[in-house]
Length: 414
Ligand code: SAM
Ligand code: DTB
Ligand code: SF4
Image (tube, rainbow, N blue to C red; front, top):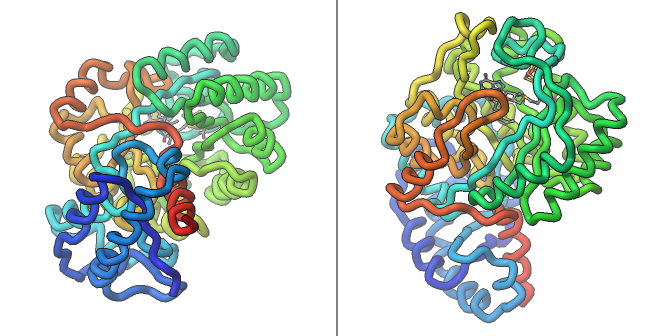
């Protein structure tokens, strides 16, 4: 049996240990597998950890190396090996739990790997807007549809670095650059500029993410070398529903890029959009695809459709309900407990209290700033007020559970 790992620090640990003992009836499938076999008694495992917590608490307190790496005030409990063998039926069973029960389970799981009061602020920037030849039926930047977005040239490195500086000053700890491209392809000049942007933004101490369409392993390695933290490439929906949304590339094309990014050692950001005319089974299908990857994406964006005038989804899609969003987020939180779950596009469609339900469901990141790539986002002040009302705090960069895992190993070695 693999030893359970835990890392925590100071008073925060007390909070973590008391919150994880919440009695959770064992109706839904187990979340964690241990040493390859599925642990049937999730709760028992949590209780076993209580004893271990006390010993590790002392070790953590004595390890300056760990404390240096440790994000102040956060806490993490890593319960062995995270499952990647979910069946679609198991995921559907979780998705369909009574709503309050689903939220409770997501909440309990959230506390095992993250400080639930921390929500990461991220900033998006469209560094090359419009003129994309793909036919994604939701997208403002596709040339196939008559939308208000006009193609623009690529931004300069200086302008991007300036924008990243503003984002950092406003509290963002992750900066994501997007291009309206099917693929990076043979755009050598543009790629050179992007590598420079990545390296400069990385030098500012921010997590850097890019979303540039399809990339090969060689390109992914160059991005990694330049200092890229994460690559965003969404599956958008289930394999079955995908052809009704996009015809110019396949689901397997998307999976190949994700594989290339993984192979280069870059953290994967992969999720989808709700409101594309999909069924509940398609939402479960998307979650199943993500949660059965050899390694879960470290970051799972859940977007609500932003209906764009002129695109087919203006008619064929529909803004998802708060329940559909929260169920999807909560299920993602439970089946991928160590992933950041990002409440991404579409927040303008939800009231502050509806967004609060999504935080309760386990979302722990939002995009802040007035603009996403081409569409509107809640005003900075509105988000600041929401954080204040909820007592939320921002999340420092590079403090994902993966970092905690390294800290844990250091504790155990101490
Ligand atoms: N062109 C690249 C690609 O498609 O991978 C990167 C940019 S693309 C705009 C990034 C993601 O934004 C898409 O995969 C999609 O999930 C999301 N997105 C685009 N338009 C959206 C919309 N109208 N509503 C919600 N999400 C949207
Ligand atoms: C993701 O999943 N959502 C972000 C990010 N990844 C690149 C993009 C949202 C785009 C919303 C539509 C727009 O502003 O054009
Ligand atoms: Fe192009 Fe990306 Fe928009 Fe699809 S989602 S049309 S690939 S910019």
